Image (cartoon, rainbow, N blue to C red; front, side, top):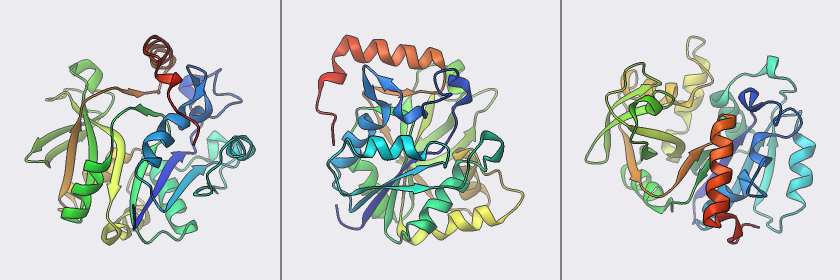
Length: 257
């Protein structure tokens, strides 16, 4: 797909997954014997983007370089942030902005958090981003209000997001953001603008969406996906995803880019 690059955010330290994540970065943890990031790449590669960038921290750089040698795809490259320890973390939005600048990205961009496990095609998301030249989010109905508290909760009208609340105490909907974002090249500068404000939170990607909607009055669109989606943010979810993948044989499909 011309005029499209992808960034897979993989620079966190996954403290909630310790001790598993003590020596292995979360995107390389196996689900059904296959690294989480390979499932993401399977969906990314079918879009045929011009570039695929894995944004990683300095501590786990060598882990990803070794993993990269197992692949046969010259589109995949690493951007390494200077972060060596959890105490130095600046946040996912900071990592995203750093990677955009370091990679000299000036084309449309798909951003995927490296702990997403999903089986849906992202072409519709790219299409609505291009048609409207606006941010677009992949959405999923978790069908549980208690579970929705963990995510950015969305209200949608005609594919346009009319309300977004990051991790609300009392969600009014079970429709949530999956941390998969399509960003038009015309709007990339907004991320840098957000980062430049010292009062803006630099970690939660949902805070960027709130800022776009309520401070910048930017239109943001969404596509509701069905199928399977796991946010590998806890040991319980990691175990649940492993059981599902092994039961369904998802890990036996083509997964080596």
